Length: 252
Image 1: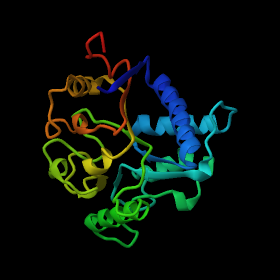
Image 2 (image 1 turned 180 degrees about the vertical axis):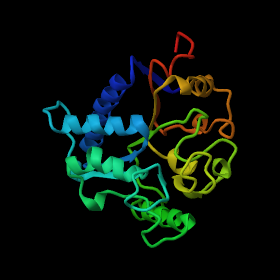
Image 3 (image 1 turned 60 degrees about the vertical axis):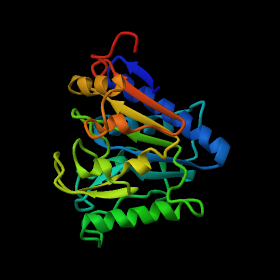
Image 4 (image 1 turned 60 degrees about the horizontal axis):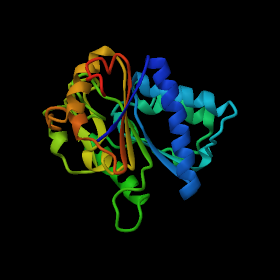
């Protein structure tokens, strides 16, 4: 069963997740010497990174060596590199540049003007990057923590209900005609999302409360509600604000 944590509001949620993220990466580094994280975009995802940057500037009990953190993305908009819709830009501004994460550890998904003109080529390239960082014989590196947002209809990364991405078994895939703009994207598939040691779903706002309740009830299929198909190898955590948790049973 997933863990469910509810914070009073979106700001408190972002602060709590930021502190937990720092602790999780520090713990991974204590064991492995390095840590790896898959980032998400969206309002709450960016807010978390901004709060982590605040912790970087302040004394903290757990310290992360940001020169030894590998950063990946769960999905990306296939738009030009300087387009503000790119999750990469938001993450660089919020955390990666202030924290001094080395360029070679920032594994961004290709932009549409980076030399790969089709999203399918970009997806294949990114799958190759993941495989190159993986142990021999594996297609994915160790992923200590994977962050995901969720849309009101239950999409995660760029896997939307009732779309071919739900059943695509590749680690990385192109998404065309996305229901939410921009329509062309690159996304990790379930094969990669569910390979992470821990998956944290960050959800805020009352518009997402019905999907949260449906996912946690356990009776939705991934085709109906992609968020219901995500789980970490060791842990799955739903980190919610009070509005997003508004339709959960009281005991949750």
